Length: 434
Figure 1 (cartoon, helix red, strand yellow):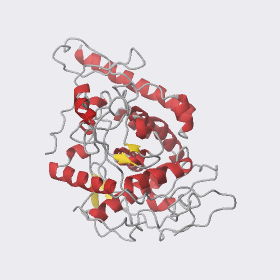
Figure 2: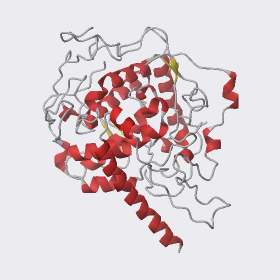
Figure 3: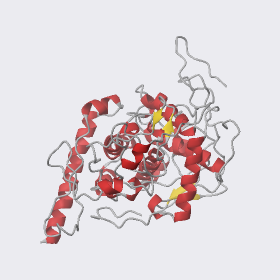
Figure 4: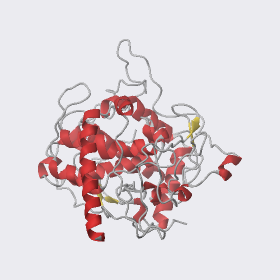
């Protein structure tokens, strides 16, 4: 596994992927396609799946995923030193995700095709995967042809404004804005091996950005965390993160040693002096590999070298042309790194008959299991005279919340919050129209 640098020799800025130039977008797509070809996406999916119970429903959530993203970005930069991980601002098209260019063929593709749910358009079209079994990359939208609404950034910032502790903020974001995207896209994206889909990393870069913005509200948030881990032990800046063996405090400043990034519309974090991060290689007892082996070079292969919170319908971007010791009685798990054959490609003639996501987005609304859920596409020429309320995201399924290590009670509280915010947005829109 690539170790983090102890100094920053080059600072990068993570940006919304739709704001990148066509050349920058294509650079990113080339890199992730090469990562997939090497089998690295399977490795990330396996790693996240094996460790999920320790980093979800736990106050390691933010710090661990920040480190996980940096791990991904570091491997990107082994392929192309100039590659930077962008984020997906799902808050821009929260009320109609089908219109989001990120879910179009110009970017990551949309819903899986009927039958096998394989993703058939975008940069991940017909991707195969070997974890957790040999299959295609899948998405299965929550309501058949629709994802349902996501969270508006106004609701996210309500949580920022009203939450003082790290533990509370983690719980509210994880069980609200974070979870609804995973559930909405479905398929592999709603599982704990979701990192087999590159879009996972852009979604979590957005979650990381939300955490970074909340940190800016109080300088102490760059120094301290609170809460408990999956075993109900206190989590502090000195706590050791699962798998990585590094302390939580090493993640708290994005422009600090080893991380070396900021976000495009956030101020740079303050310089917070810290001791050299504690690194405890070999502490991982989840599998029969050490953390050093994950991300090791695959067999020799050739390398390839802004938020508008409540906008009703922003204009779409132009499409871009060594084994660790197991505890007594512990069973060895699968390796975190996929070796051997690369992930297969799934290719057959049925792709030609699959409706694209852009076609689905042409509809004025999509009905899901809730017959009253309508996802408006404002300014439609046939409906300009008829006002339609935006729909709040529907409650997340209780069974899915439990099996995915979420907190159903917190999810219910967050559902009430987002319902109120969407009601406020609709009331303001009506007043404007009147």
